[in-house]
Length: 81
Image (cartoon, rainbow, N blue to C red; front, side):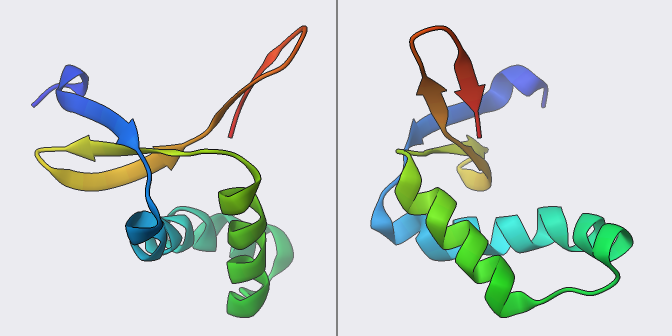
């Protein structure tokens, strides 16, 4: 498969648990290297704020969720979360 096999669809509340698991897999190593420890409840909180702050899309490959993204269009910029 190539990158063009990745599809994007609007996220629903049913996607929250999988997106949280993806967040943990993606950030745990980074957080531990930078801050020395992983605080699961703090990370759950950061995820929750971001998840409810913007509409997200789920990125899928072969029907399986592999990531998520939010695109925020501002007056003079675009922010990708």
